[in-house]
Length: 84
Image (cartoon, rainbow, N blue to C red):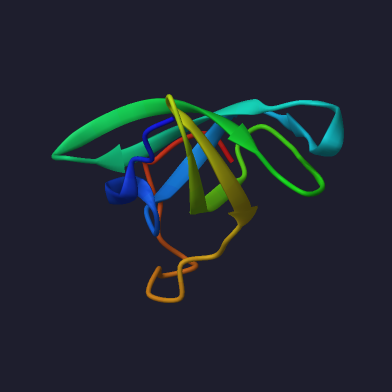
């Protein structure tokens, strides 16, 4: 299994909710000048639209994610990076 190190540390938005230990969701990650989708695993279930950070690559387009809030984001801005 080949790990995709470039995706680690990238933010993304869950397009399909994760189910914790019961199964993955899907995350859209901004990477390599565009957006790519990956199966997303998390320790606890996370709802669709959650902003996440990729913390590990499982290879073959699968990643581990955690809920994340961008500390540089303006909380009052209208962001167009996905559903909220």
